[in-house]
Length: 428
Image (spheres, rainbow, N blue to C red):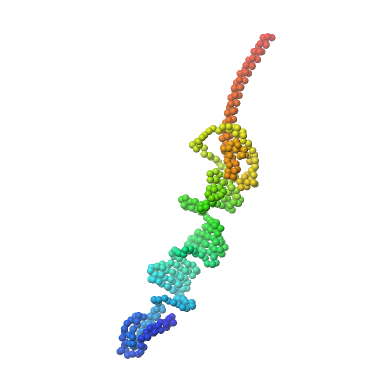
């Protein structure tokens, strides 16, 4: 401060070299001319004029007061301030409260302010405040946090926010962070042990979702979609979506595969796996394949007359039923593990043989294997029973006719026997 005063004194003395310092008679004071401009209380002399000691002393007193005012209050610079010190700085006095750098009208709506706060400042000590238009825009806190009171808008063509070179983690927090009243997004780098290169989303002190570097997404709660027509779909390649429980495709997992148009296996279909075996396969033609036993209260098929046309009675049902060859057998469960066949003894028909008799009951799958629709055998069996019933009725009627004839002839024979007996008695 003393150095600044000395410099100011030297500056004034050099600029007022026209003042002749002399003891003059007070009855002949120098004439005052123009205002000096440095201080309202300074007396200015015309060039070549002299002043008495009182005038000179008054000038120095006014100059000293002005220097004190400038050093203790405001210092207005009308040009740039250049500091050539090797390590230049502007700081507050020893009370270390705050330093204000102001543009415009300062803390008003038409001003901008930077406040560098010291250790003795009660608000944000050791921090920096940035105010624009009378409002706090940003705070830099002593713990390294940066608090923004508006939007952060980045105009870079490829903007990003990242951690430093240690590449650990970047935390975006709302509310009180990891507490129950906060929400947090954690962007993890290569030096972070948990979920390296991933993203964590926390809600109310609990982790809600994790995005892993292998592109997996882990939900720790329910996924609720409130859209009026919600859906989950694949990208434009439209291959498949896999919904897995447990370990998936293993004996301890369960899987539902929803297949798209570009899936080479069962396009537009749905596959359900129980453990590592296919339990149900639904094809795009709505046909379904069950890999195990099906237990249900009812199996209902559409059978209304209004659904049908070209209705004709079934013929030769009995001969068809008699041509079928019921057999017992075992499935090749080891050879066809993916089919989930039972290892128990089975009874049924061979589809390849039955196709020669009732082709309507046989279906060939996409791999060329034959399957029997046993439901369609029911009308054949009903028809064969009806044919047998008609034959039995015919035989019964014929039997009744024969019985009547037999009774007639029996009576005739009995009458003849009696007549013969009478004749024999007369002859004797």
